[in-house]
Length: 210
Length: 210
DNA sequence: AACAACATACCGACTGGTCGGTATCTTACA
DNA sequence: TGTAAGATACCGACCAGTCGGTATGTTGTT
Image 1 (cartoon, chains in turn blue, green, cyan, yellow):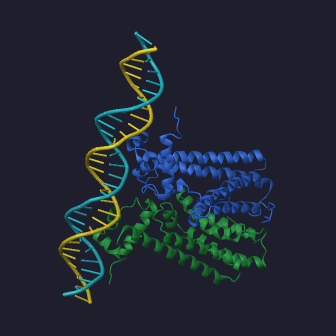
Image 2 (image 1 turned 135 degrees about the vertical axis):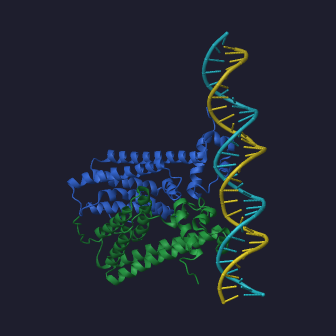
Image 3 (image 1 turned 60 degrees about the vertical axis):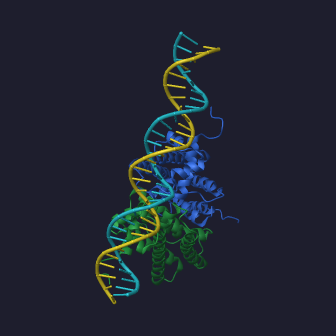
């Protein structure tokens, strides 16, 4: 029935997400959001019963899309090869591609943003964030453990720590990328992680011609 | 002059740093800081002419101590060995030790906190943050480049990207550590970085007995 | 007397949130 | 088909409280 573009609710979410990542939650007033979206106060409170509920909605939305991205990427990698080690390397490669296509630095991670403005990080929000991170760790670590059975790594690895590295590198890479206003840093860091895993498992690396 | 403990100014800085890292800058009101420190409004504005000036002071203080920590660590490593590769590995080892001693998750990085609550990140603040990050990159990359002359790495590395990795891993490690409320994660991640560089340069790694 | 180091009372702008109302669309039933 | 009933989306004036900041003291030391 809606004829014109995204719904009011979606416009609020989109704008607020952007503003909160830039300014922080507390520093982003409703009036600012209202002005930027052209939505009135009444309309806002029709869709969200409080500012905190907006934060919660924003959060759920973010977690959902992040989970989806990881899931899709893993499945793509699994279709491309049956070798678990290659699946990990391809997953990292796909992320690298994704981040390499950015023309501006990645705006940042909502989880980190909330963590640095805590006390609005409720126990449920915290638990969901942990789950999201834990999935990445578990999925990657599991594949590497299987890979190690047929292809022993050069040194005994801490699989869980390596599983965490994708999260760590993405989080740290976003901050560094933002700081230097250089969109390429994030992809470069992912490439290092891939290189680490290749070295660990003795995979032949192509020396880039460039 | 001052007979009892830290000065009022120092108490404000210390408390505010802690609160801002936890709640964010905008969410930390002067009244809250005043209540927590027992300092009155008059006293506060005697020492800082505005809340923004407090932020600036906090920031300078943070950058200065961070620079000092890196500098001291690098010098310690340089005294312990003359081999540049070993200097890098020892530097990482010292950081690992430092973070491994934490009993609670590292409270976070003020630069990241400010980056996620931008618009209070002035051009000067931004420039100083970049410089701080750039020092780490430059110092580590330089040592690795020298090391590569006598000990060729297994694959052609992106030295600058590897130089950035310490920053990236620390930033990401802090977030992950805080999220899981696990102080050990940060040190584990530094260990992975060390392992990467060891593999890259073909350094013999001791398999931990544990 | 002069100045640093505080204390107290107060200010206006802005905050998140409420509330009474309207316009438009969907559904139910005669 | 017409119409009454109700839901949904939206409007904007208003409110009480909080915010950073100021003005004007008081105290203690040199």
